Image (cartoon, rainbow, N blue to C red; front, side):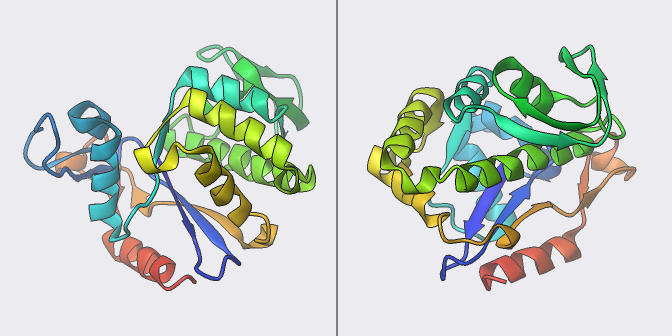
Length: 235
């Protein structure tokens, strides 16, 4: 689960990743749900994408204009649509759980099933937790931003509309986001943002807390409040 905020002056953007096991208050969604906190990934079960959006809005105090849900199959299709993503890895990766095998450190172009395996891998990177996996996902997405900007894709309307068409076929989009012109206009917002002003962060959180957070991820509320206060002010 990721939230992207673009500053009003279109000179910076922040992407916040939410750990799948982050325990949060659940709103009243379509299928109800138990009282108290639950891991954020359960929101899809209790009310689909709309429930996830409402949960994140309540958690961050931000109004979400557009949303999309991508499946494993969609990740494969979208990585192919952009021609693969060159990612730099700092060490070999061998994860039999996802089938990801990268022989040595360096830059490797990821597309199709390899891209999906990289995004899903926990056992091959970091400490084997979802928090380590978030790092890989952010590396992949930052590399994707660099590739699209360096390939001049954002100045090529033919390429842009091709990617937008692939998105409408492979991502479940909110009704106001499913129009090709809207997708392209949102993409064009990224054109003039300097790469150094695109920041990827993780929702402030920690493990090792008891109670309802036992075996899960707990928010660090005071730091989260500071983060979203800064985002609201476009800092």
